[in-house]
Every structure is written in C-alpha cells, then in structure tokens.
Image (cartoon, rainbow, N blue to C red; front, side, top):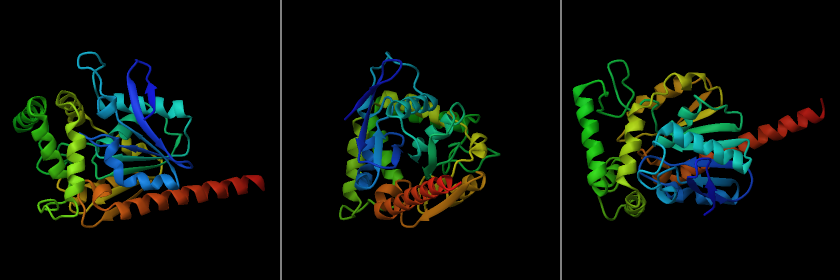
Length: 299
C-alpha cells in the first residue's frame, strides 16, 4: 500500500490499481478504502485510487498528535494526493461522508482536475431542521435540545464503546432487513464491513462525527457545474427517497440514478449494477475526450 507523507507529516495510505482513466474512490464514515472491495474488478479497465482518509484505517494518527480532524481537512489531503499523483480527468466517487468531503473541498479548491463526481446516497446537510427536511431520517438539528442530546449520546458511545457504534452503523447502511438472516447473501459483506469498521478508533470517529453533523454544503453544491451523478439506494435506512431527488435538482449539471433493492451501501449490495454504471460514465467521458481531440486536430 503506497504512502504519501502530507505537508504536515501525516502519512496517507492509499491503493493504486490498474491503468487508464483515474477513479478516486472515497469511503464513508466509520469505514476505510477497503469498503470498496466489490469495485476492485474495475481496475482491469481503469486506474483506481483508493485512500484511507486521515485518521481511518492505515492512515490512523496518534491521538493528541494531530491537527483537528475535520471534513475539510480530509479534502485538503485528497488534493495533496491528486497533485502528488499528477491526476487529471478524474472520476470522483464519494460514498456518504466521502461525498461531503468533495463538497467541502469545493469551497476552497478549484475542481478543474475532475471530469465527473458520483455521490452515493448522501445529503449536503445530514441533520434536519425546520427549513431542511432532507437530512437523515428522524434526525434533529444541533440548534434543538433533542438534537444536541442525540449528538452528545452518539459521540459518547463512539468514544467509550466503538464496537457497539460500528455494529449499528453497519446494520443501518444496508437495506432494511437485508442482513437479518445468516443465509442472506449480504451477511458475508456485512461481516467484512464490520471488521473494517472495528479496526478504526472510536475517539477519531467521534471527532469526525462532530465535524460531519456541523457541515453544511447546501449552497456550494448549487455552484458546482461539473457533471455529477447522485446514486440512490431505494431502500436506504438513512435517507428518504426524496432526499437525493432534491439534491440532484439543486445542482446545475446532475443526473439521478435509483438502484432498487439496496440501501445506503448500494455499491456493496448491488455491485454489478453500480460497477456497470461507473464503467458507463467512464466510457462516456473517454468517448467525449477522444471526440474533442479529433475535433481539435481538424480545427
């Protein structure tokens, strides 16, 4: 696993598989790059760059010896990685928190190196409020006593009993009832995700959770002209079906894809459908680029 020493000395670990169009895959909360185990087959046609974000997995940092952990900081790290690898014409895939990392980055960075962004079942503001009904199902804003109490309880459990928190996370990312049966075809995938999550630090997770629930990218996504795709799990336990519709409608150059019989972890639950979608998007970008080159040669 290659390592990039970032500008502040933090070691960012990442995988770099295959050749061709670069696809940067960024994991969700509580996970690591290993959560894209069903996407590795795409490396036979494209170049996959799959990091463990700062503080997660192999990119863990010593507690008390790091910058404050935030969604924006993870975005800065990714731009260092992109510059280091000299990437361009990138397809960015952000699962859940990974999408928020991209949107936060757009506040500070130029997106010229990217050709397409794919967000997996995510909202630009994860907590609901009186004027924002497109956060997580049943959530409350931090400006309410109920919301503050829930956040405090969740953060406390992450710090003191991360295995319980990670188990709850894994259960929620699949479609409702999908992994109850040990005979379920998704039971093995759920075990993989749980093992991945349990290798993380609850203390680190708590710090990131605070940053995640405070993030608000509702305005910035309205200005992103880059072609984007929102991929929605029709049976998501985290976001109602109208959330991704509303998000996509608020973006100037966005398409919505709905995947049936899947939840928040649709790239795990329906990998063939998801991988085919990624391949189709990558091929369309390559075809457009080739046409632009030909056109330039004859002009």
